[in-house]
Image 1 (tube, rainbow, N blue to C red):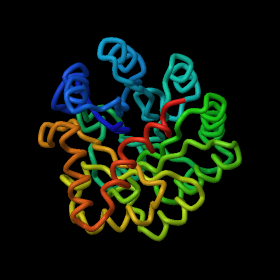
Image 2 (cartoon, one colour):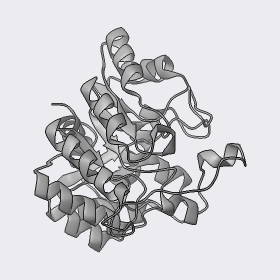
Image 3 (cartoon, rainbow, N blue to C red):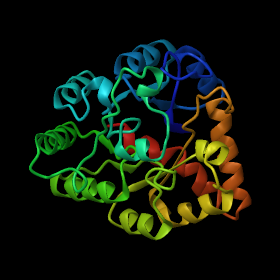
Image 4 (cartoon, rainbow, N blue to C red):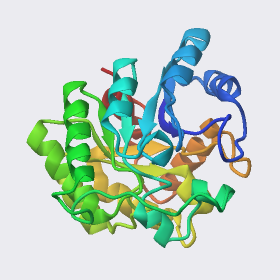
Amino acid sequence: MFDVHVHAAPDVLARIGHDDQIGAAYARAGYSGFVLKAHHESTVGRASALSRSSGLDVVGGITLNRAVGGINPAAVLSALSTGGRVVWFPTADAHTQESAGLPRLGDLDERLDRSVLSVPPVLAADSASAENAAFVLDLIAEHDAVLCTGHLSGAECRWLLEQAEARGIDRFLLTHPSYTVPGMEPGEIAELAARGAHVEITAYQLFHQHGMTPARLAAVARAAGSRLVLASDAGQPDSPEPPAALEQLIAALTAEGLDPGWLRDASGDTPRKLVLP
């Protein structure tokens, strides 16, 4: 088993455990490794240290929110050059996050403005930010890293896939596309999966997404087909420990009639091959 999406302390938000505690939980559960994600800082150094101490394949990356300079090629180059494997486009600072009223760093201090991030077609293609996005995409291609779409809109996810195709980026993951943001439907997800996008479903959706059901997640899984990736997106104090969260997601989807062997591949071999070089 290999979890491509987990959160740990220290973090802006409360977490169920620190890096070493989360790593110990995965080791007890027999996982080969996981991807450590944070919304507001690079996790590359933390993941490297934990990998050395735990013997697990712990992978880090960077999320392109305002705390790292937004869609910032310098931050991406630094993260990928020091062993990072994953680049998430904006999450907490995406324009969709603000529109949906979901948590943002600015919630902690009203002195921080509420500016948001986007890519084309929401963002003007001739802007400096669009040029930075293109530079970031070039860096992902050059380092054979994983491009994750973050919390951007469906139209922006489609644009990112087009740009990935043009650059030969094969490691492309739609970040929980059926979550509140971007809120994509199974038909659209199936179309992008047919073009080579991997599709993430998370246990967080099962526990915390308003209106989400196992049946709806099963429909997304069927749309993803062989490109399905299951992840926990856990680490919240009101979620189970991440390995247990992922097991509960697998059990819920199995109860919807999905093949358990396929689901195990989607939480093991498929994500591991997607992330590791």
